[in-house]
Image (cartoon, rainbow, N blue to C red; front, side):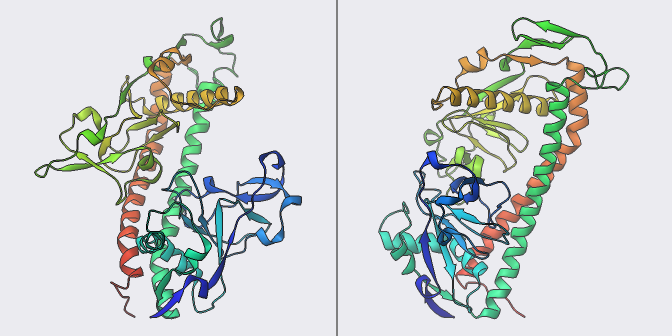
Length: 411
């Protein structure tokens, strides 16, 4: 083991600050929304800015490490990811900081896992005597790690990165499966080309469409206009801080908006397992965060307690999960577009909003057929998500052990 300060193995650079009105096209740029919980950056679908305002000093290279430098949400500050192979200019925003390693005795991927470990957060917090709120170049540069030989680094990286790559491969598969479901939903319930009694696409084959004055559009015969409350019940979560587990009680992790995005972690709060069953979330439940961050998702992160500001969405008809999920997702997208057109920020969605929503409700036979066609795909997504949950727990278990030198790898 050798001790290195980060400033001794590379150098930091803050990202590019630019005004919103200069956003155009020409150069891709990575910002905070592009981090998520990724280890390797995805540069395929980045926003672009005018290349004329980008100095080449802000271009990224393979093996550069990016960190979230500053953000109003302190939980995001310090997140990191590494840059893979890129074939075009990619810059990084001023809310990020780049670390470029120059010491050939230190593997960039090994440093990435150091920065992902609890040890990094602890060491940086110690330099500030407070929680992480902003990454400072000088403070970062003075952080000192014990770094093993190059051979040992390779062994550690091989184990940790194989798990990372498997997780990200699984996520790609799930993204593709989700896209298949979304395309089928749009084809059946937006374009109205669900299979008719002869197995042909309904609208394209001349299926009867009736004018609906309320929506000012044609809809299939025997379909109706309703609201979201007609297809699902919405259970709002608890103020879980009022239901902490007592010493003799079992506990459940609290599912807040943070857990919806990042899953259960060591920082996740706990709630008594004796809370009413309607507030307990299980794999396959639909969750809808209705305050500040509007998002609809299937939960696959394990059993937990539902926190306030999140609805558990329970379809009123059995076996209509996928249909309800996409109906609600589409409504939330519409709500966001309305708010954007009015140049307002969304506070939250109330039960009144849900009751006032106007949606097209398909005939139950078509919903049942849709669920039958999509059930196996949803099951596959759940299985892959479950595998990723196990892999993430394994990664979280191994990461501090390997980074702190508490575990060694034999030849």
